[in-house]
Amino acid sequence: MVNIINKSELIAKDIEYQISKNIYLKTIPSERDLAKIYSVSRDTIRQALKYLQNIGIISLNTTKYEINQPKKDYDWFEIFGKNSNLNISNHVLKNKIIEADKKLSLKLEVPLATLIHILVYKRILKENSISKILSLDYIFFPDNFEIGFSIKEIGKCSFWELISKTKKGMKIKDYQSVSVDLLSDKECKELMAPLKSYILKRTSLIFLDKTPILFISKKIPENNVLV
Image (tube, rainbow, N blue to C red; front, side, top):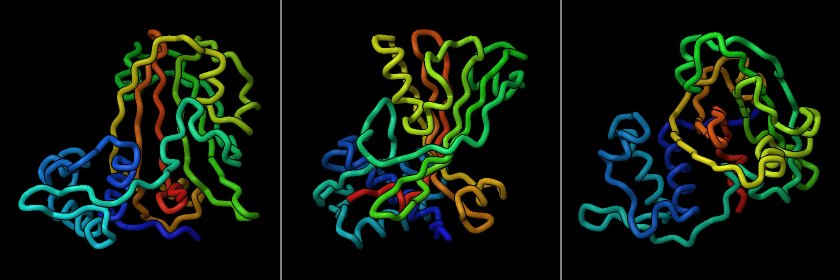
């Protein structure tokens, strides 16, 4: 069974991710700013930063947290074909069309009752004959959007790898956010996690030209760090 860690460790791993991608260079944001970014208390942020200090990723210099550890190679946000050489398979759990309710219409910036295609799949990494669950990915897009490929193809390629091939050259705008999320009982079962588990959730609202695509990925940190 997967061992889902606590909020502070989830945040610490995400800060490591930001460092690995050169989003944070010499220093990381202040405790106050990090608390706003992750919508948690400063005590939770202090625990996360203490964890990073203990493993040598950062050091506290007066009032700033400085980065002092060589960067690691991560596979956290596999979007638009990044790290596609990994042996990852995708198992589709849901593929249906619904009418957008108020919440979904606001997120996608579309009228109420717009037909929305929902795609949910579980990503699994096979490494040295061992299978590891990476994430549950949720994708929402208008049903009239021609994706240009069969859903069956997602078994071997991510949605974003396929989109990058079929929609090459389209203008892209990407708005990302990160939060700590409580998994539903059904999600815990799919991820083989204990009930009432917390996990890090990455949300992206992506516009391909003017077409909105909402992407939510609920990832298991310990299986997404590939050193």
